[in-house]
Amino acid sequence: MSTTYVRLKNRRGNKSDLPTPLAEGELGLALDTRELYIGGGNQDAKNRMVQVSNYLNAQSDSQSRIDNRLVFFKLAETENVVGNGTEANLSVLKGSQMTLPSSKASPYASDDFSLTKFNINQMPVTIQSSEYQTSTSGSNVNFTFVSGSIPENNTVIVATKWTVDEIVSAIGSALSGFDVVQTSSTNQLYIDLTTGTGFVDVGASGNQTSTASTLAGLDIISSAFKNADDNIRGSVSNLPYTNVGSAGKIVVDGNLLIETDSPGQALNLSTFLNRATGANYATVANNIQIYTQDSRPVFENNIFVKPSSLNQKQLTFGGGAKDITTFDTTKSNSFFIDYSLSFGSAKAVGTARIITDGTTAELLDDRTEIASTSDIVFSADLSGSTLRFRYTNGHSSQNATISYVLKHWLTA
Image (cartoon, rainbow, N blue to C red; front, side):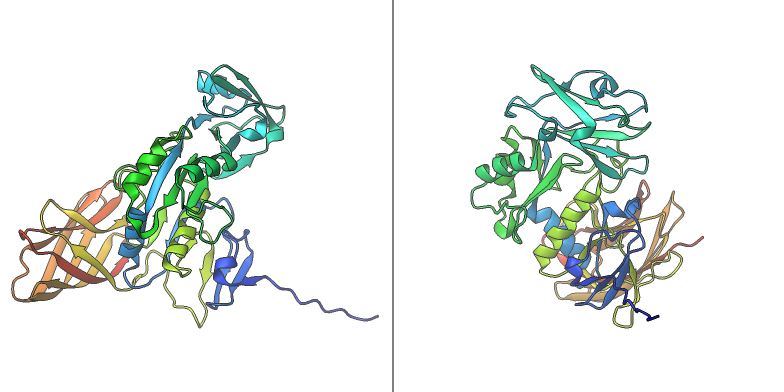
C-alpha cells in the first residue's frame, strides 16, 4: 500500500492581496513583507477598525489625508429599525411608513434595495432579496420578511434605498473627471451599503468644499461634508457608536487605530489610505499579526510598553487648546511622551508624563531649552474615555513643530 503525502498550504501573496479579514483561524503569509497573520473571526469588533502601521508621522499623516482629501456623504432615505424576533414588517417595527426616494426609477424589485442586519455583536450580514418582499405605495415602501427570516430580537436592520450602480451613475455624472469605477485601482468613490454612507477622494486638488456642495445637491445624497465639519460615524442611530472619538468623527488615535461603524467602512478607509500613501500601511485590524524574525515586534498586550515611531505635528499659533494626539483610557492610562520642539530659533527637548484614573488627568512637563519656548504649553484632559494630549501656542505669529515618541501602558 503506497503512502501519499499532501503538502498543506495557507493563504499567501502580497500583503495587499490577503483577504480582509481572514477567516477565523485562517493563516495568511504576506510574501512581500514576510509577515504572518491569522484571522480573528468575522464577529470580532476589530472588523470595523483600521490599524495603521508605524511609519514616520503615521498618525498626523493619516489624519491629514482623511481630513484634507475626503468628502464623506450619507445616502438619502436610509432608515434603520430594531427587530423584536416576531414582527416581519419593517414599517410596523419603525412605527410609521418607510419612505421611498422620489427620484428612484421604477419598477421596483427586492434587489433594487439593500437590507443589512447587524446582529447583537453589531456585525453586519447582507440580507438576501429572497428573504423579504417589497411593496410600494405612493411615497412609501414596505419590506416584509418571509417566514423563517424574521430578524432576531435586538438586531438592527438598515434599509438602504439605492444600488451601487445607481450611486456610481449619479456621482459619476455629477463629478466629471473622477474615477468612480469600483474595480479600478485608481477608484475615488467608496460606498458602504451596510450603513448607507461613503466618501469621495478629491486627491490633492483641495476642492473639498465644491465637491461637497455638488454631492449635497444630488437627490441620492442627504448630506456631504468634510471630516472637520460633520461626522459619518453614528449615521445608523441604533448602533452604539455615536459618542466615540471626537463627536463621531474619523480619528486616528495614539495607537494608530481608527474606529468606524462597520467592516465596510473600515475596508474602504484602509484601501484609501494604502492608495493615498502608495504602500500597504493600513489593514482592517481583525487580522492578528504573528511576529516573525523579519517583522518588528510591537507588543499588543495592554500591560506592556508599546512604543510607536517618530511623530511630528505643527503647533499653530492662536486660538484655544488643540489636540496633539489622543488615547483610549480603557487600554492605556500611563503615558510618557519624549519630545523635541522647534520654535523659530528656539529649540527644546523634554518629557511629558501623564497619568489618569479615568476621571482626572495629571501632566508634568520636564523641559530643557535653548531660548524660550514658554509660549508652547502642554495640557491633558479627558473627553469621555478619551485622553487628549493638547497644546496652546500663545505666540502672535510663530508656529512651532513637535517631534515625539510615545510609550504607554495600562497601570492596574
